[in-house]
Image (cartoon, rainbow, N blue to C red; front, side):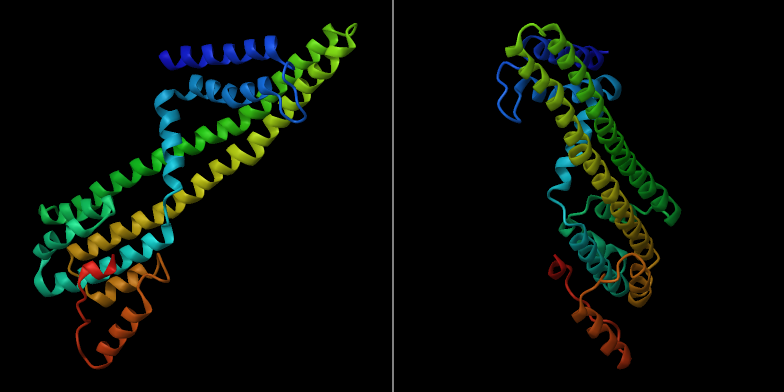
Length: 276
């Protein structure tokens, strides 16, 4: 209810500002009242429909994308899984406790915690799947939020256009006021189209694409953790990971493993710290 009242109040204020200050500071393609309407109006309406929690969650998701390198993270985790597989085969599952603090991915760390706590493979799968579903739900909410903003912006621009046309018609006897009123009508439409087409809709698509890649990464972690639980071989794990990332291990590691296999030796055990 608070989000609804805040959104409604904010939208009412943007309309008031446009009605009583529209056209006052018009300069070329810059019109402050139109910018206020299109900058705050769609967000206020989204606050009414989505709520404050979902709005801030969507903005936090967007900010988080700016500092991620997904391809690098996938290759890094692939290398870590490969190294852990060799360690588990040599020293047992207890060795995971030694390497867990070195990991950065929270889902990966949670998976190792479940293994060390003695959970069965089915229980590990259930717990990690639940975390993956929660993460994907957050991405879905963020996509819905920015898609809504993309749809609201042109509509908000149309509201400004109608207000500007009404102001223009009400001042037909005052030629000096026709230009600013027409500027409000046109610039609100322009701002709305730009925000909807160039800003909000591409952001929604970007988050959607990232969510798909994040799902692949999380599924790779799930499969890798289950293979660690079952103490599968280095080669088996590498083949499974190759379905998620073609560059899951470095060329040096692949060549070293291939040479060891040709010589009938077990894959070399590289310290996990070297994969970070």
